[in-house]
Length: 119
Image (cartoon, rainbow, N blue to C red; front, side):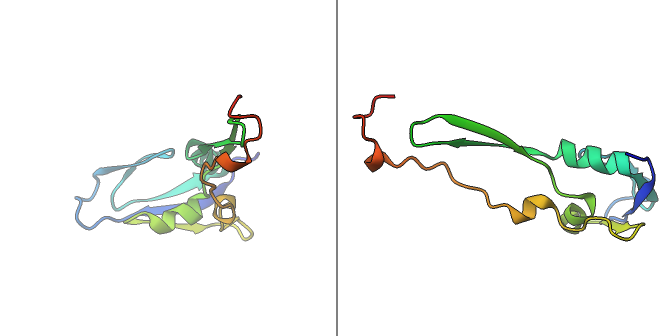
């Protein structure tokens, strides 16, 4: 993976003093009122940091664990107050892969248990 700049990130929170440091989880500290260039390595680290572990159970109670990567910085920033991100290169993924996946609730179907509840 190259370390090219892929995003431009601007922090502008009017209620905070200019220069005050703002934490963006998985990315670092940024000064209010400043603009930064974000590398592809930083952007990928942000996604990894914001990954989530999903635990599912089958009908027998066997656990299956999987990890879903966090959204792209561009997609997630749309929900960050005072933070704007724009892509510096065409073709940068705008929609996080996690937005296309549905989370499933843990459901155990008791009626289909055919061995009397023994696991």
